[in-house]
Length: 558
Image (cartoon, rainbow, N blue to C red; front, side):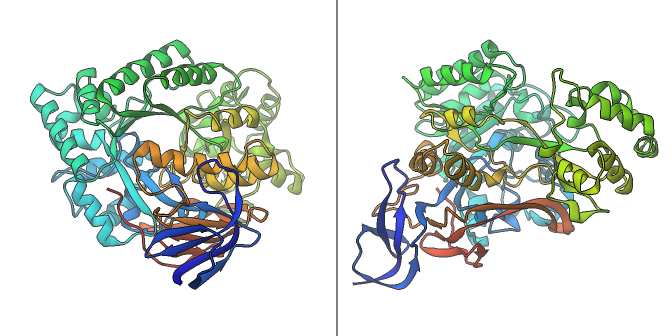
């Protein structure tokens, strides 16, 4: 019998955690019809010898809501084997949106998620009002990935309350209206609901985002509407270093979740060598899972943030640097630039760099140059390597670049999640959810969306910290089941033919580059990958030999 497509001769890692096996995968009408020794012929065949064959990866934590309006391929996430994404995370998004609310939503995204307003205002048409209408828009637009979403609390609140959403608690009538609109959105295809109480989440006015004004009665009522579904929250206590406060916050949400018959995922959970909070939080969530689904979100990648001198940044957190930078960000732009040429300032930074006190270590071999208008050839190199090539101290090269670039130099600096043994232990824990890729957000700060490639190439292949079958299950079946994404996440008959054919030995992360491809030619950081022989979405090739095909077989997940 002839099939539409057969993936022939690969090592099948089916997403269940079961041992891998040599097998063929047959596809008909966008679905898998056989996994095994397939004697049928295919109208198209993909040679998978020497490759692993996996379900398409599911990224459960993205901020692609706006980007999908102008980039149906969700680049470069789709270049990392991802075939399905979840949007609306942390309560931020672009639907629902009442008349007159668009600018507030977009300017909030600019502040909270670092997605430039100059791009979103050009690229987001707002041809919808409700969540179901937004999903309809995405389907009409055409997609290279499947898209599911959580109704974002801040957008929902602004939709119902208008400017009052920024001012304080909702009235009983406003709370009821939010619950009704959420219920309509869930009935219309939303996978769940998302919120944030994160203390760093401020809007364009410098005020707490709308979801942070919600009292417990409001948030609990919205959770109650999620029966049988998932909800996500960014924690209020995430930065406190207080395990008791964090676990008490999670305990409260877990109780609401159990009462609602729902599932909970909270974020973020990073490994921090300086504390045991992450261990305590993980132990607590593991205990809760005896009676309710509570999934802390974790990442395989070292967590990075941007180092800049044109505005306050992680520079203040480098061990020994805070005193040197005292008053620096209160200076005028010209004065800050002049400081880059000050020999005393440089000497103080060089001395401070050897400080072994609390704070971020000045490990220049891990500081990645992500933007330098005067020296674009250095982008993608570490500051340590570039300085060694130039025969300079890293501090001197950094100051030279900042001066030449008019303070527009940017670096990506790891701050958390740098203990691979600890990371491996949380990745394989059955209660966690792998994600935190933030695709579509922090466009000039992070490239954490590359985590599937990093997980497989570094933690599985190079370091041997995570078994292949477990790693694949963590980014396929686990998010599918947690988010209620039916018929995806496994290689089995009847499942959607979302498939990755990956040359594991050749799998490599590309260098981080700055590209000006956002609407209005605004820049962003892009990190591609090599080793993806083929990626299929609903049975159609979307990636072939690491290149996008231009096909748009994806659709909204409802």
